[in-house]
Image (cartoon, rainbow, N blue to C red; front, side, top):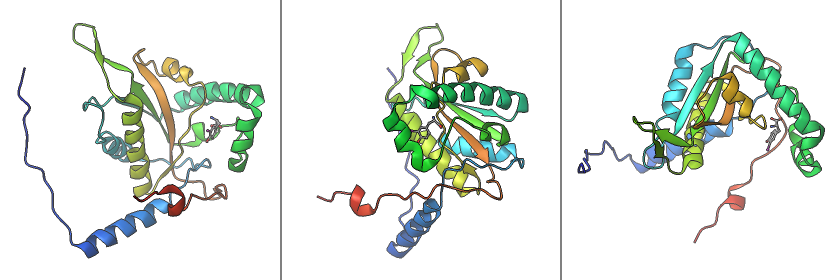
Amino acid sequence: MDQPRFLPLEFERLSQPEMLGRARQHLGLMKKRRSVRDLAPDPVPRQLIELAISTASSAPSGANRQPWKFVAISDPKLKAEIRRAAEKEEKTSYQGRMPDEWLEALRPLGTDWRKPFLETAPWIVVVFAEAHGINRDGTRRKNYYVAESVGIACGLFITAIHNMGLVTLTHTPSPMGFLSKILERPPNERPYILFPVGYPAPEAKVPDIAKKSLEEVVVWK
Ligand code: IYR
């Protein structure tokens, strides 16, 4: 067994005022983030998507297995195919598969089965979670905390997209199995989430909803 190897941590302590300033500035930035469903067709350079995926892939993960794969799609034919398949599932969901309580919960968001953003967005990034890895000899290599790890990576992706001046949406067309087929992913990869990415449409509107206050979400002991 190899011994673990260690490197010195690259870290610089900041002054208290600088820490506060940076924390407030970052909060101010993140508070402006919204999930956007009205996207503009304007092109977005591939380099920006690469940077967002690299940021996401810097996430911590169970046993550092990095159990994620990002499929970045700009091909209009593929986007149209994804829209067609997503809307078929969503129509079934909205027209009977989702219980009334769920539909009621979604009412403030104003969503329905129509997903035009899947074609309008210049990029769709579909994130797959690797349920397990595969060793050279074809046997399974176990992954750990897969859902948590991929969720953290997705959070970093959303932050990166917002920070670079683009918008996205955490979209989970349900069920998502069609994405494995269309994107020809192997069985150990499970569709986890879909991010349309682009600029907002000039007339873009977002639901009038609010986040919980700090008091509502924190318990100090
Ligand atoms: N997948 C559907 C429904 C939906 C579900 C939840 I939970 C949301 O927060 C938003 C939508 C859709 O994308 O419309």
